Image 1 (cartoon, rainbow, N blue to C red):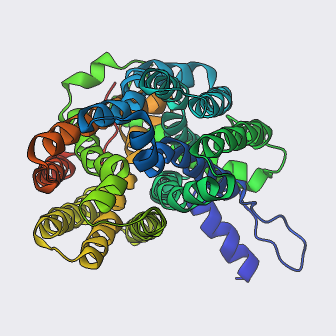
Image 2: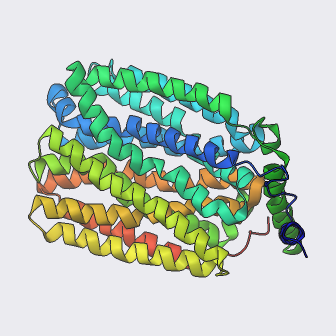
Image 3: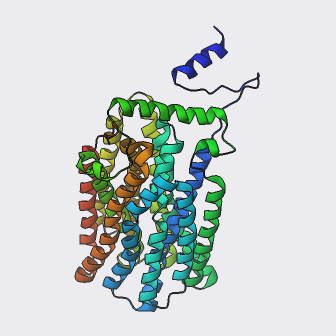
Length: 450
């Protein structure tokens, strides 16, 4: 039997219509889906640069606006109020109108709101601008979850999820350097916000140019790649039909399933840690460890950069392990269980160490393993399929961002009342425990019968 025949049979067994390229000039599968997700990674990174910019500039803003710790916490939480409230509505819009339109509108809107925050004259106007950023940014992550369901083969969704979500620590890390550099270069935190907002609007144009709601509609996708993706969809649809899935577009029927609530509470616990460190981390380094602005920027880069590396590695491990034949439950519960244990231990360590360099090292380890939970962005497509990936992603992110608006306020109250960050760090430990229980409870093997 020839090599060509052997390859053809292997592809047929996998349900692929792909043909290998070679000397005979036969078509090779394109890789547009990976380039699209690199674009989404950059988009999410810009997203987190914008939302985290206020944290980096906060020592200056707090002094200029004469803000008490309680008002700082309120200001940091403003973004998350509207961001959380918009998650489920925007998830429904994504499922109805497609992710491309929603993401483009999000970019333009949040870019304008970020620029407007640079014009704030005091607490109230800055607070309103942050509310606006929250509204506009709400569609990005649920749309990314939807695109993961549409564009990625089921064997690739771990990497798709973590490439998408890795933009968060990358943006948080780069944001520390970029915003401090812009402040130093322009002499004003206001100009840095205006420049960041303009860059975001340009990202919106790039999304409209490159992203499509169906691989078949993308000019750069060849038949081999489209059929490879569609074969995965067909296999999943067949499994869903066998399991009694009706394929209704809905949210309420999911509320009766344990895995739905485990998904929501897992993401809530994760964000209790991540958003706490994102919003209060720079002030913690400034006030508790006495770092200057430049040192804060580089320390933030190291801490969140470790999270970026950890997240990409976690997605690769998950997909490779699944490809070797391990069940989704074994892979996800093992990786995310390890993540939870390390995060709890690392945060407890931060509360007892006095040396600032050791604290930065421990926080880097925490972020490295915490970001493995970015694999959660594959769960909306696991539980809801392509039909409901948008609204389930919105529900998950809504739950997570309850922690987003509660955590900055709670930390502000703790620091204001105690004058210390110890109990704030223990609050993060409690969030990590909730995350750990949830990731071990969730069933990753089956789509829910809705």
